[in-house]
Image (tube, rainbow, N blue to C red; front, side, top):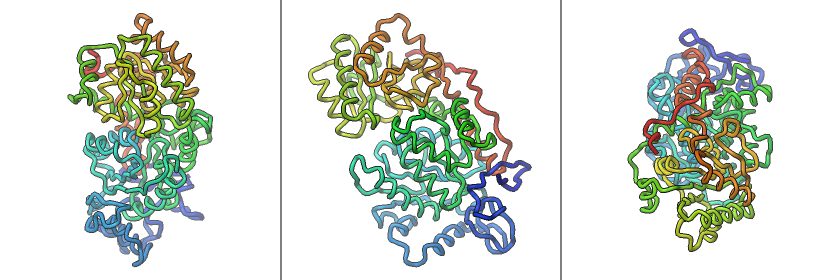
Length: 493
């Protein structure tokens, strides 16, 4: 183990893997020793050991590392060269010039990452101890931008990835590694923060590790214990755990998983899930739904079932079984509106549109804005989903969840009675949904709160990063034994 030098009288443990081989010195973001012989944790220093206030030290190191022949896509990171490359596009927001406080680079690739890192960005920004920076990878840029706007995030850099086949995960990962390597060398963060288990998350953690930058993993420790479900996310998050120096576990179960794998208790903190923070931030927003039927259904209190399905392991026969079950349920319950929010993948949407033809009580839509979906979910009597995030969000709204997967890494909802695993078998889906729609008080049986968080996870996570950098005491963990009540703006739904 290694320790960050004291700042304000506090110490934090860093993992040996984040130190140069053979070195007993604490981690330093630039990887080379200064002439003064002092450790540099955050901030830029010149050869005399003083802080560089012009903000150029990180760029100087990047220039030395890449030389005069760096490619155009590297130059495009510079604010004055916006748009020259078409591969990496700067948002013209340079790193803070003073570098008077440590920096944390948040890597965001998909909408769930934006939703769950948005509250952390605000907590870091408002906490005034650690300067947050953001890079978006372009993995799902079309549905990320509205979430960034919601949380007031303007990225330092946005990557523009080349087009690839829908299943081109290896190519995506390779593209992300090369571009993130350049971004991190330029922005020179003291820590890199990733959330979850996507290709962007793994690429961000791997790149940071290769540059000897400590990795903070938000939502660490989720495990299904099957590499095939969810695929490839289960493998991604296990790999990220191997690379991470600080594990921010959302629940005690996730913490137990990490300790079982041999991670040091000092490197793990239970924070709660920032998805709950994001939901509290978004719920009650006066936003109209994109279709008049959905708007009138929510306004009039019509019975509503929300359906989402996108998991890669369900593509093909599994997705067709889900669609067949929803079609049968729509026929059996004509008084209920089934709102099916489909994935961006056109082949997934086609399965549902084909199955639901000529059914007036089934509405199929593409991805909604985050605040729109929160409003729709709050109106639901039950939700059928294979989404991990919705398994966390629905219990906060007291909406029962039928999980369209054979196993889940979010076991807390199942154990609390807020969720039921039904898989992709059509008969099981029909039986469970029919019971939820006909059994008196089915919605009220969902836990009146969430086992996943209390709306304060972002603050704990920001404090944990500050502790990691030696700036403040280690925060108290999330107490999962104190369930929360739904937000007051939702209680009337």
